[in-house]
Structures are given as structure tokens and as C-alpha cells.
Image 1: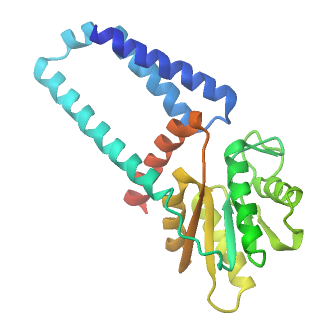
Image 2: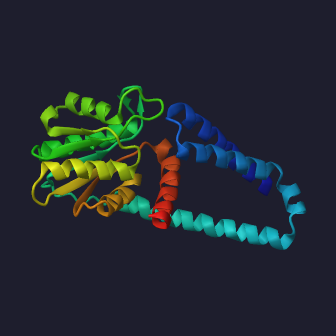
Length: 247
């Protein structure tokens, strides 16, 4: 019975991962879901043989370690999720930094659209703030993310002279580093920024913003479609662990 449940969970995750590969740009989170599904599926299919081959004591230790790491992962994801929905903007910030995400060709994907819609919402309440759209050109992309983001914002009522493109970044760290270089040239005195990204990305985004030298940092979250919750939070939890270990 136990092995059947494991096989069922593995099959569901495998199919889910394959569907994500079709619906979303291939990334680490999508790959993790698909690989995790295959591993669990195989573990369920060969559960009896694995249990016979591994000594009982070793099997119990591995099982307990798995449960421990699973609980730690759930706790970390819960923290990231709660932090990610606690906005602290006051709509008096001097600049908005919208972090890039995958695009398809030259069109923004749904997660990125959600970020940009939040930037438009912010702009309507504080039209004087500069909007920095940041993101270079990645796989499956024919233009830079920043170019596609600027195009979307202009189509949705944001004046072109209020948008600055940062088109070199390939990571969140570079998003913040290059955006700071741009904004340092725009302001002669201290300035404040609001980071706009999806909920799963808020904690790491604002942490890196502070690490790269931004002093007055607020954050405003965008939502995320339900089917991307698992890959995005899994990938982000690993990125947060990496950030704390490697800096």
C-alpha cells in the first residue's frame, strides 16, 4: 500500500513537471519538479527491493534525515511566502525597480506581467517615481527582458521618459547592482526605492538590494499563478540557502 502511494505521488509530480515544461520556460524549478517526480516514482516502484538491499538501521536513518530536511524545507518556504506578501510601500519612493523574469520571444510571460501590472498600479499612485526595468536576454528570448518590459509599460499608460532600461543583468544580484549604478547617476542625494517582483522572490530580492548598497528599500509583491507555486518556491528556497552560504 505504501509503495502504491509513493508511486502515485511520483507519477503526479512527473506529469506536473512535464506539463510545466510545455507551459513555462524551462528553468531550475521546473526541472526540480520533474526530476523529483521521477525519483519518487522509481523509489515507489522499487520500494520493496530498496528496503531489502539497505540495512534496516541505515534505512531508518535515511528516512529520518529525509523527514528532517522536508520539514526544514517547508519551514523555509513558509517564511519566504509570508515575507513575500507583507508589503511596506508608502507610495513616496523615488524609484521603482521591477525585476525581470522570463519572456517568450518578445512577449512578457504571466509572472512578469503580474510584476509589471503592480508597477503600473504603483505609477498611478506615484507618477513621479522613476521605473527601472531590469533584465538581460536569456534562452528562448529574442529581445532583452527590459525591452519587453518597457514596451508593456508604455502600452499600459506609463510615459517612456519615466522608464529606464537595464539590459545586462542575468541574475538578481546583477539586477540590483546595475540598477544601483543607474540610480546613483540619477540622484545626487539619498533616495528610496521599492522592489517589485512576485511574492516568492520578495525576500531574496530585498535582501540582495540591501547587500548591494541600497539603504531605503521597500517592497511590493505581485501574485503568481497556482501551477507555478511549487517550482518557483522550490527553486527560490535553494537560492536563499545558496545566498546565506555563499553570500
